[in-house]
Image (cartoon, rainbow, N blue to C red):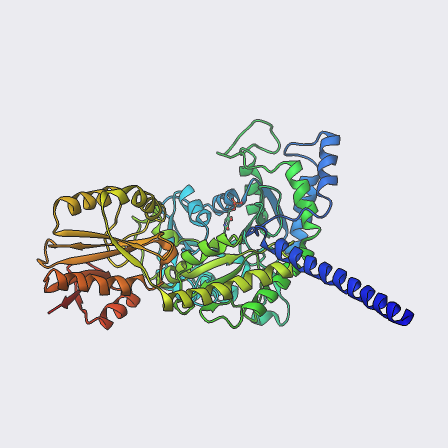
Length: 574
Ligand SMILES: Cc1ncc(COP(=O)(O)O)c(C=O)c1O
């Protein structure tokens, strides 16, 4: 009996211990899950060294403006790290580019080559000096300026090439240097995103050099999301004494160094403060650690994402050492959802991402310039995402991000297969609900999904009015199972210019690629049958292959429209 009680006690003890352990394990996993679930920003600085100490020193010693020991120290240590003769601090990476172009005497009437797939500052700096940017396409794999596409765009006016080591991936410098030498052009390296990136020229046999040490002049940025930061800040580096002197003069209001308040040239106040330099210096002391961590992050991402169909991983050529300022992926058609919708879904899971830069030649300030041959950049820009990449990003967070990318793809496929929508004829009661839907459409600057004409609230209201007064236009809402508006479609009794009934579908961004198109088209055909309408037509962008395929499966035939990039689809119903 006694033994029995003891046995029981022993078992109870084991059981209690077991429960406590399990509870802790559960809590532990919950904590991991919660930790990972917290908002993950795309970038975040790591102030892990002497930042506070050096800043306090500035405050204690009263050296808080743009002279002081930290400015000099930051410049010296930076030039040593890059392996160049001169480094000159300035207020940010944009003005660094402006100073670089001024130092090279690039001016009105000159042309400067640069990639179109880059941050806006690269091209803006060319406009600042009155020169003309000539945009060059990027390579399909590195996303950097394509050396094979530079020479065809060189003219007598070309003075320089600005190369950008995009997202930390070094450009093919050897090929670019050869072209520049052949045509007597300057090279400016916009290394804003490439601190710590290296390039290994074939003829240097094992001796790699830092990005920023190849060009006639190079620039860096220390914005808060960069490899190292000084809050805001920039640096110009060069081996050329004349250029260095000119940059130092221009950034300091063009003031003569031997004669105070005498300004022989038009200058600028582009100085960096001692306090900012103090932070920059402290950051620079840890640069190797930062780069090592970024490369480790990239390795983990590449490992966890390697087998997801429809995700293209970044390329690191054997002649480069990638700093992975940003870990980037491309979202291909095979993933099943377009890039923008995926970013929205990730955001809902607490994961912040960034789209790739828009090609600069498509921006309003640049549209009037003559452009050609930039298709690769357009494609890459449309597909690219920057994933969170920063020093304190943990492996559990990377796993969580990768898990979400796998899960969302699975959900999208499942939803596509099982999609079933409620289709509801519009009455005036729906107008309020509809207004909020159109706000989303407007916010995302969406055009009709299958129909290439812009759509806005005004036109939507007009359609409602027409649909209520004139039954030749029919207007329907598409609701999901939870009665959320997933889209709408419209059947127009008579399309001007084509004299047959037409229809258009608009899909909410959250519902793209989830089977609405097909289901709605089938319903629309049925409505036409019921109304004894014998023909239907629609318009679709020429490159919208997915939509064309779907319509063809429902017996639509396509021909060229009178508008560029547009096809007309026709269906004989009876
Ligand atoms: C390629 C490139 N050039 C220039 C800049 C401009 O740097 P800043 O923001 O410091 O002016 C950036 C900034 O992100 C950049 O990415």
